[in-house]
Every structure is written in C-alpha cells, then in structure tokens.
Image (cartoon, rainbow, N blue to C red; front, side, top):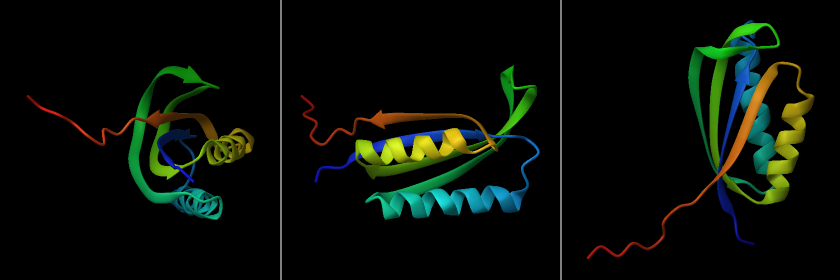
Length: 104
C-alpha cells in the first residue's frame, strides 16, 4: 500500500491545560498508528493570537502533526477532531515530497 505524506495542524482552545494537550497528542498518535500511519512527528507550536476570533476565542494553542498514511486515515482523524470540543479548527494538507530532482 502506498502511503502519502500529510500535515495536520489543529488549534486548541486557549483554556486547555498542558495535561489535556499531551493526552490529545498521545491519543492522535495512537489513532494514527492503529490505522496504519507511520513516521509520526508532532510539534507544539504554542499559544498564538488568532487573526480573527473563532467562537469567541482570540488565542489558540497550535499543534502540528506530520505523518504518512492513506486517505482513510485522514478521514478518521478529521472526524475525531470534528467531534472534539477542545479543538477549534483543524487543517490537513497532502505534502508532495520530491523523490528525484535533476539539476542542470
């Protein structure tokens, strides 16, 4: 099975504790592994000011996940994020990785 590279960034409510943040990260890491994902890399981007308010929040906690998986895995992750009340926004993009480059 061919696995694509994906990047998912999600924004948590600013009142989420560090323990809840770490438990969400661990939950999504196990969810990715259980559904055939590989090469999971998580970065905590920290609290940032939002450009516009989202459901009356002006700040958010950003978390970035990079992983390899298939389209079904992305659907499972996004459904879980949609149902999570602590996540304000999320975005998943497919990354194109250059495998062969010719430089002349």
